[in-house]
Length: 197
Image (tube, rainbow, N blue to C red; front, side, top):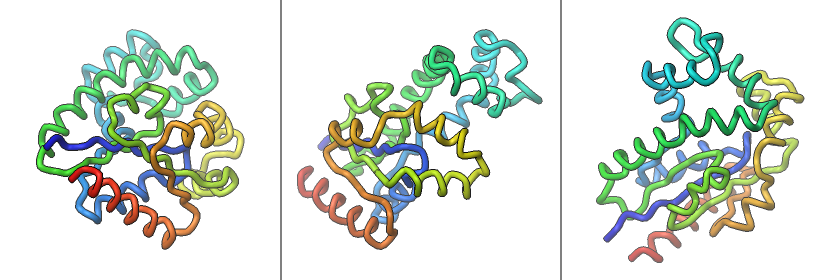
């Protein structure tokens, strides 16, 4: 039986990682693409590729200066695209290797903010979108990393809308209240396991 790949996505501040961890508690292996992408980005070989495209000023003390890079890419879609073209193939390869270590799982969760934008959903058996009202998402991000409203709204503008994501998803989790979210996760878990048997 092939392990099913379930894509988990949602806008910034929707609570994707919270939802992923709820699935993990149910025994589902989870792959947090953003976290893995950060680790891959900080490899010397990746930094070399980034410096070739963006110049040495985005590298500081052998690491990517994320604030400098964010300023460049979030106001320029072409530059964002360029960065994605460097990072995404490396993350895709890493995920493939990770997946081969979880062949016994009924399904795995691949959590990524830009599942649809990178066409990664085409490699998924199911897609779950995590949604939440924009004002709640903004306040979560502010509490998490002290970004300004303007910075957060810029990032939201750069992402797909919930409506657009939901139209292409098999399941939707409305993440407003943790107890309700946990119930939705259990229900979807059972459905996917039953579909897969």
